[in-house]
Length: 80
Image (cartoon, rainbow, N blue to C red):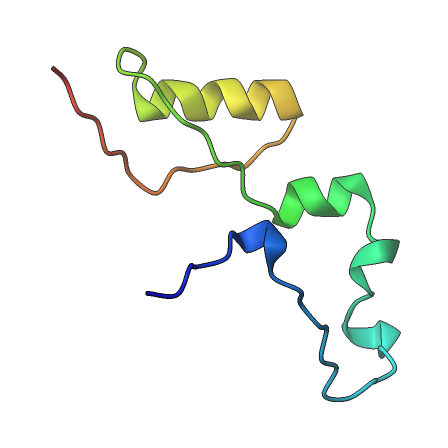
């Protein structure tokens, strides 16, 4: 049986299908985005422990990031 390589041992190559100019009317490249844009349009992935509710954690995120709108996509809690 052939030995499988670890992911970091695999040589990878970046393939570019087409180089295009970005029309600033529709946005900008990721390298030019501000932190504010990432926070406003981004996702915060949290590993919530059991205890605080999803609503409560959402309120904490809003307060910490000083943003007006935030929500959650549900919760998967397992208790043992």
